[in-house]
Amino acid sequence: MQHSPTSRLRRGFTLLELLVVVVIIGLLASLVGPRYFGQIGKSNVTVARDQIDSFVKALDGYRLDVGAYPTTEQGLGALTVRPEGTEKWNGPYLSKAPPADPWGRPYHYKSPGEHGDYDLFTYGADGQPGGTGENVDVTSWESAPVTKPQ
Image (cartoon, rainbow, N blue to C red; front, side, top):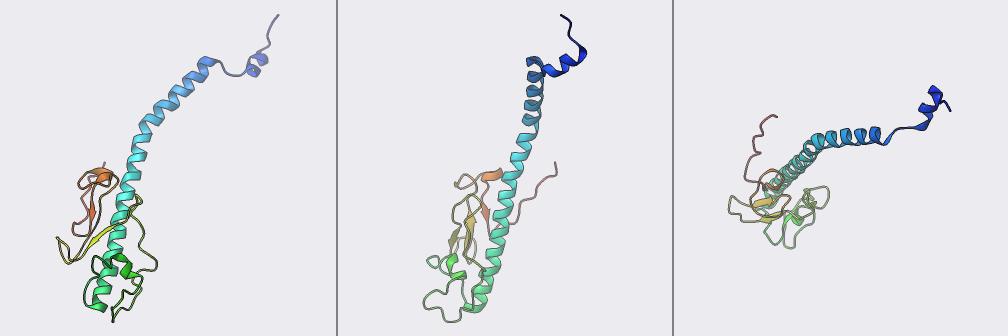
Protein backbone atom coordinates (compact mmCIF):
# COMPACT_ATOMS: atom_id res chain seq x y z
CA MET A 1 0.00 0.00 0.00
CA GLN A 2 1.54 3.23 -1.13
CA HIS A 3 0.81 6.61 0.37
CA SER A 4 0.47 9.55 -1.93
CA PRO A 5 2.36 12.76 -1.05
CA THR A 6 -0.92 14.47 -0.20
CA SER A 7 -1.96 11.80 2.34
CA ARG A 8 1.01 12.83 4.60
CA LEU A 9 -0.34 16.40 4.67
CA ARG A 10 -3.79 15.25 5.73
CA ARG A 11 -2.52 13.26 8.73
CA GLY A 12 -1.59 16.37 10.78
CA PHE A 13 1.40 17.01 13.02
CA THR A 14 3.44 14.41 14.82
CA LEU A 15 3.80 14.44 18.59
CA LEU A 16 7.44 15.48 18.24
CA GLU A 17 6.52 18.50 16.14
CA LEU A 18 3.91 19.58 18.68
CA LEU A 19 6.38 19.21 21.56
CA VAL A 20 8.94 21.37 19.73
CA VAL A 21 6.33 24.12 19.27
CA VAL A 22 5.30 23.94 22.95
CA VAL A 23 8.95 24.20 24.07
CA ILE A 24 9.52 27.24 21.83
CA ILE A 25 6.39 28.97 23.19
CA GLY A 26 7.50 28.19 26.75
CA LEU A 27 10.94 29.70 26.14
CA LEU A 28 9.44 32.84 24.67
CA ALA A 29 7.02 33.20 27.60
CA SER A 30 9.84 32.79 30.11
CA LEU A 31 11.75 35.63 28.45
CA VAL A 32 8.86 38.05 27.93
CA GLY A 33 6.74 37.29 31.03
CA PRO A 34 9.00 38.78 33.73
CA ARG A 35 9.48 42.00 31.79
CA TYR A 36 5.75 42.35 31.19
CA PHE A 37 4.76 41.72 34.81
CA GLY A 38 7.54 44.03 36.02
CA GLN A 39 5.97 46.84 34.01
CA ILE A 40 2.57 46.24 35.65
CA GLY A 41 4.12 46.81 39.07
CA LYS A 42 5.80 50.00 37.92
CA SER A 43 2.53 51.27 36.47
CA ASN A 44 0.76 50.76 39.84
CA VAL A 45 3.45 52.82 41.58
CA THR A 46 3.02 55.52 38.91
CA VAL A 47 -0.77 55.51 39.41
CA ALA A 48 -0.33 55.85 43.18
CA ARG A 49 2.11 58.74 42.70
CA ASP A 50 -0.31 60.48 40.30
CA GLN A 51 -3.24 60.01 42.69
CA ILE A 52 -1.24 61.44 45.58
CA ASP A 53 -0.29 64.43 43.41
CA SER A 54 -3.98 64.97 42.68
CA PHE A 55 -4.82 64.78 46.40
CA VAL A 56 -2.03 67.27 47.20
CA LYS A 57 -3.52 69.81 44.77
CA ALA A 58 -7.01 69.27 46.24
CA LEU A 59 -5.66 69.59 49.80
CA ASP A 60 -3.95 72.85 48.89
CA GLY A 61 -7.24 74.20 47.48
CA TYR A 62 -9.02 73.14 50.68
CA ARG A 63 -6.41 74.92 52.80
CA LEU A 64 -6.70 78.12 50.75
CA ASP A 65 -10.46 78.21 51.33
CA VAL A 66 -10.73 76.92 54.90
CA GLY A 67 -7.43 78.15 56.30
CA ALA A 68 -6.16 74.74 57.46
CA TYR A 69 -5.80 71.22 56.13
CA PRO A 70 -8.43 68.63 57.07
CA THR A 71 -7.78 66.91 60.39
CA THR A 72 -6.83 63.26 60.53
CA GLU A 73 -10.36 62.47 61.69
CA GLN A 74 -11.91 64.35 58.74
CA GLY A 75 -9.48 62.64 56.37
CA LEU A 76 -9.58 62.84 52.59
CA GLY A 77 -13.37 62.66 52.70
CA ALA A 78 -13.33 66.37 53.60
CA LEU A 79 -12.32 67.03 50.00
CA THR A 80 -15.70 65.87 48.69
CA VAL A 81 -18.11 66.38 51.62
CA ARG A 82 -18.23 69.47 53.85
CA PRO A 83 -17.05 68.58 57.37
CA GLU A 84 -19.26 69.74 60.22
CA GLY A 85 -18.33 73.15 61.57
CA THR A 86 -16.35 74.16 58.49
CA GLU A 87 -17.53 77.64 57.47
CA LYS A 88 -15.49 78.56 54.40
CA TRP A 89 -15.56 75.18 52.65
CA ASN A 90 -16.00 75.84 48.92
CA GLY A 91 -15.73 72.29 47.57
CA PRO A 92 -15.92 69.68 46.44
CA TYR A 93 -12.18 69.72 45.76
CA LEU A 94 -12.27 66.33 44.05
CA SER A 95 -14.86 65.31 41.45
CA LYS A 96 -15.57 62.03 43.29
CA ALA A 97 -14.72 60.29 46.55
CA PRO A 98 -11.00 59.53 47.01
CA PRO A 99 -10.24 56.15 45.44
CA ALA A 100 -8.34 53.34 47.11
CA ASP A 101 -4.70 52.94 46.18
CA PRO A 102 -3.90 50.73 43.15
CA TRP A 103 -3.62 47.72 45.48
CA GLY A 104 -7.13 48.19 46.89
CA ARG A 105 -6.25 49.74 50.26
CA PRO A 106 -7.15 53.25 51.48
CA TYR A 107 -4.48 55.94 51.46
CA HIS A 108 -3.07 56.94 54.86
CA TYR A 109 -3.63 60.59 55.83
CA LYS A 110 -2.37 62.27 59.02
CA SER A 111 -2.68 65.94 59.88
CA PRO A 112 -0.58 67.31 61.38
CA GLY A 113 2.04 65.08 59.84
CA GLU A 114 5.53 64.07 60.84
CA HIS A 115 6.99 65.31 57.53
CA GLY A 116 5.01 68.52 57.08
CA ASP A 117 1.53 69.95 57.56
CA TYR A 118 0.17 66.52 56.64
CA ASP A 119 1.40 63.08 55.63
CA LEU A 120 -0.29 61.27 52.76
CA PHE A 121 1.04 57.88 51.73
CA THR A 122 0.50 54.27 50.72
CA TYR A 123 2.70 51.31 51.62
CA GLY A 124 2.73 49.77 48.13
CA ALA A 125 1.86 46.25 47.04
CA ASP A 126 2.93 44.51 50.25
CA GLY A 127 1.07 46.91 52.57
CA GLN A 128 4.15 47.12 54.83
CA PRO A 129 6.46 50.08 55.53
CA GLY A 130 9.60 50.19 53.37
CA GLY A 131 10.30 48.15 50.30
CA THR A 132 11.51 48.45 46.75
CA GLY A 133 10.02 47.95 43.33
CA GLU A 134 6.26 47.41 43.53
CA ASN A 135 6.49 47.34 47.36
CA VAL A 136 7.92 50.88 47.59
CA ASP A 137 6.14 53.38 49.83
CA VAL A 138 4.62 56.23 47.80
CA THR A 139 4.45 59.44 49.82
CA SER A 140 3.49 63.09 49.50
CA TRP A 141 6.74 64.32 51.03
CA GLU A 142 9.26 62.54 48.78
CA SER A 143 9.85 63.37 45.16
CA ALA A 144 9.54 60.72 42.47
CA PRO A 145 12.50 58.31 42.46
CA VAL A 146 14.91 58.50 39.57
CA THR A 147 14.64 55.43 37.38
CA LYS A 148 17.50 54.20 35.29
CA PRO A 149 16.78 53.45 31.62
CA GLN A 150 16.98 49.77 30.75
